[in-house]
Length: 345
Ligand code: NAI
Image (cartoon, rainbow, N blue to C red):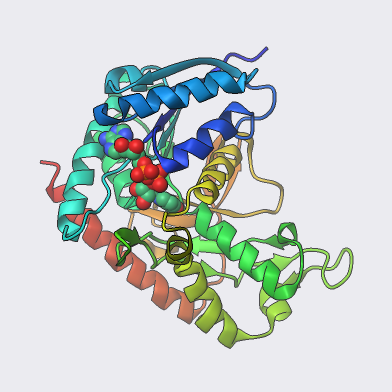
């Protein structure tokens, strides 16, 4: 049998973790034959809740779980890890300014970046989920000097999945027929609803997307042709994707958790096991200057994955409308970056 993979989940007593841990344990992230050792980190005041999560992992009797390291100690949590799902973050409280939020998170992700540098496998794959995810990933990467920039990513797959599902519903096909909707840019700090921060300046782009086997088997139709309603795409679809998190909060009185966990599994599974031929997914990764995005920003790009490495897909056509939105998200990310880096020294 394969040697177990050591997977760290931070924020392990929180909502998203409560779904994602059990998906990993049941083999959805690394496949049905890959054992895992779960490293679970939360803060001291959550130690009892974390014990409860471990009891439930035990009670699941998962054949793939080869061990559990549940701890509030950062060194024990990061020791030897090969995959890091950085989900725990500092939430914005009432009256808290955006600057304070960036500051609190800079200190968390500074410490975790250093822990990656000191204790993790050199090939550790890092996925930052805790918001502001792009900038937290940037802080982590900056502090983990010596580890390759290609080890770091942030989550935009939830936005991609939301977009796929909305297009499928509009056209009237199963979601697995819709391919290559792209999410560009950032999760930005824009709104506070029911004490939850909502992030809604990410840019969904259907210009490279198509519907498989539509309208008949073995035919491929561009999404723009299948939808045939540019006004709907600009005025309904894009804001619906951007505001979906807020809509879930309004309905559930809690933020998206099971769907976020699903997106975490999709992101890491594709990174480790590879994307399907011809299929593009979105991951926020370190820009190499592709599409004129400033080098070094953690930015959501179209990627494919093979052999455990991601590659930015080049040469996609970007309309002026999408470019204007990409410019805004770059501006915002640059501002967040400046603020976060100013707290690190
Ligand atoms: P939650 O509040 O239920 O859980 C967060 C957990 O993190 C708590 O148990 C907390 O004690 C822990 N935590 C805080 N600081 C920590 C630290 N320094 N080390 C370890 N653990 C720490 O939140 P939930 O719903 O699980 O969401 C987690 C994060 O994911 C939030 O920042 C949320 O905004 C973000 N998110 C990101 C999405 C994305 O698409 N990128 C989608 C949905 C949520």
